[in-house]
Amino acid sequence: MSRAAVPGLPSRHPIGEALPALYAEDGLAQRFTAGLDTVLAPVFATLDNLPAYLDPRLAPADFLVWLASWVGADDDPGRPLAVRREAVGRAVELHRWRGTRRGLVEALRLSLGVDADVTGDGGALWSGTAGAEPPPEPDAPPLVRVWPGPGTAPGTAVDADRVHRIVRAMCPVHTDCRVEILSGPPADEGR
Image (tube, rainbow, N blue to C red; front, side, top):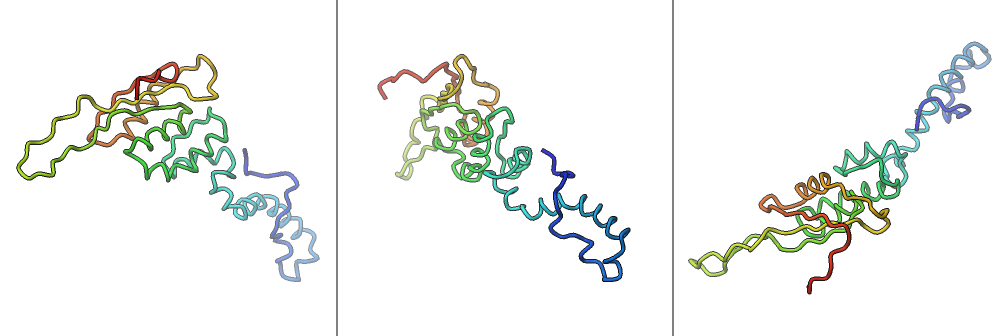
């Protein structure tokens, strides 16, 4: 999309009307300022609609990439526009959930359109009794299982590199998460 010259776009603030009365009847001055109006009309239109450019639900598609960079959203131009808009719109909320199961599952869903499940806690261990032995370490680090989400074309593979990048970014610093990429939802294992 281009916000350059738009044929026939009228200026909301014509320069010729703002000239002193001496130039109101001058044809050359009016033609010259009309040319400037043609160049400035898209600028005024953009500025008049600036709130819409900053709203991910309304912003032009090419502007969405820039908005995503403002809020730290993972924007993939290959995904449907509605999904990209939701990811950018919910990015700030998602930062609040960073380091939690909910945040990790939502980040994977919004960024890649996949479903995920996180098992294990990887949390800190502590004892309420002074001088007591520390509790045992957990058996295994948290496991993040990822599979194609609903609406994904059959046979579509999950991008493992992007999954690992998102998991590294969303897991707490002290936690080393394991990742499993599945072809479909996991079988119920008695949970």
